[in-house]
Length: 218
Image 1 (cartoon, one colour):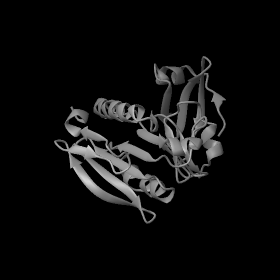
Image 2 (image 1 turned 90 degrees about the horizontal axis):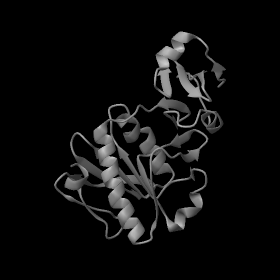
Image 3 (image 1 turned 135 degrees about the vertical axis):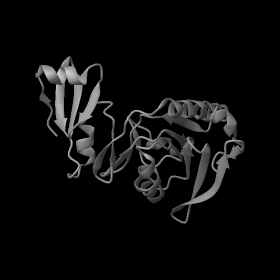
Image 4 (image 1 turned 180 degrees about the vertical axis):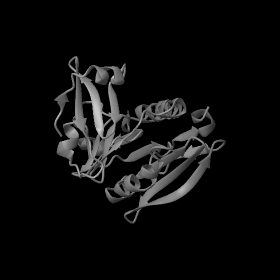
């Protein structure tokens, strides 16, 4: 991918106040006071090396060798993420279990897959994975579904999480107000329970964690 300076006045007007703007197979973005443009092709396979050449904060994830645009989430998505982040951080810090992170943070699985889970937990035993980013499978991954990401969270990303040994995977449906809890067993992620908005989440991995989902979806 080659970034070129775009001096056309209409490109600056098109970008407006945005930092990034994917349009017609191009990514327009601001960098050091300039408007730059780089091509991102849907018919091309990309690698981690290509992904790392993107400008910092570019709204893309590398999924099975494809650069997939991940649009900015809606308010409800951010509210759920913030509420759950608070509960997880309180429990993990109180019990000194490890680290909890929120997106955007790159998780590198292999040369074809770099994801940014909505939330993730890395235990003290897995702390060696943490560098400038995360190199390998977190112990817990949380994805909050949206129309633009649901198919990826349930298919391609789900398969990669299972392959590399994510111990527990939570899929949250903001519309249905449910949380699906999957546990890694026999090299697969197995659905253990679908929690409803009026139930209490109990984690297999984080023993003793209890989260009232009514507080998460409020």
